[in-house]
Amino acid sequence: MDRWYVVHTHAHCEIKAATHLRRQAYTVYLPQMLKKIRHARRVGLVRKPLFPRYLFVRMDINQAAWRAIRSTIGVAGLVSTCDHPVPVPPGIIEQIQASEDAEGVVRLRSADHFRSGQLVEIMDGAFDGLQGLVEATSDEERVTLLLHLLGREIRVRVSPEMLRAVA
Image 1 (spheres, rainbow, N blue to C red):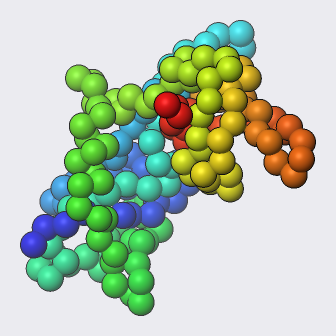
Image 2: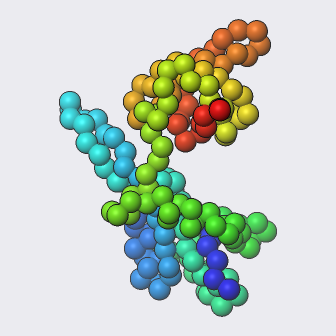
Image 3: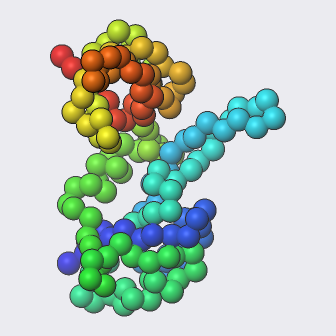
């Protein structure tokens, strides 16, 4: 049965690894996003991997020669437990693919989705489950929150994907 597996690549070698895996007849998925890059007073958008140093390969672990993946150019290894690749839970890849636009770019929630004074809950990371007020949005990639911790207000900058609005 075909399942998706996670391939760990060398730094900045996701595209190279994907190319060489496709040449070996594997089905490869490398989700990408648009990232704002500033250089010499210019701002531009470039395609970057959604998960740096990772991509996905679809195969039947019982029939594919999956051990050859580890020696593919650009590949550091497969995400494994006890030398056996761990499959991605069903539906995860499909959810990522569903959030792609016509150009194949994954559209993430931007910071402009939130407004100052809005109550939000952090859904991931060290502050998982805590609620705070949106203080500001610095750009499309960060939201500044005021959290009440240990009897005082602290400021935390988080990614908008980690937040959900509280009703």
